[in-house]
Image (cartoon, rainbow, N blue to C red; front, side):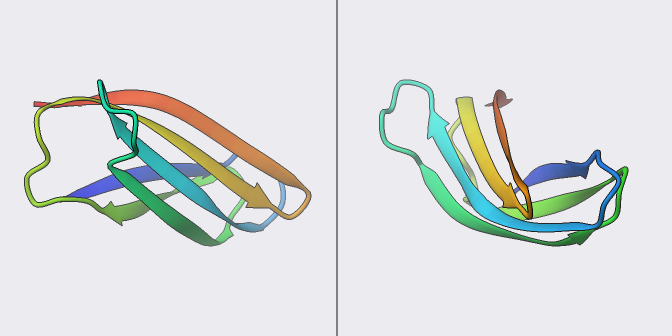
Length: 85
C-alpha cells in the first residue's frame, strides 16, 4: 500500500525541495513511518502526487501525519489526520 502526499506549488516560481514525513497511529507515541522526501522541480500552480510506500495491510484506525519541506527561500509544514477502514 502507498500513501499519496499531494504537494502543491501555489507560487509563481519553479521549485524543488526536500524534507521529511512522519506518520503516527492514534494512541502510539512513536511514529509508525518516518521518511525523507525529495521533490523534483514543480511547476507554479500545479500539484504532484508523491507516493510513499507503507505496509501491505495497515491496521485500521486513525492516523496523523506531519510533513516539513524546505524549498529555496522557504519552508512548508502540513499536519493532518486520516482514517484507514
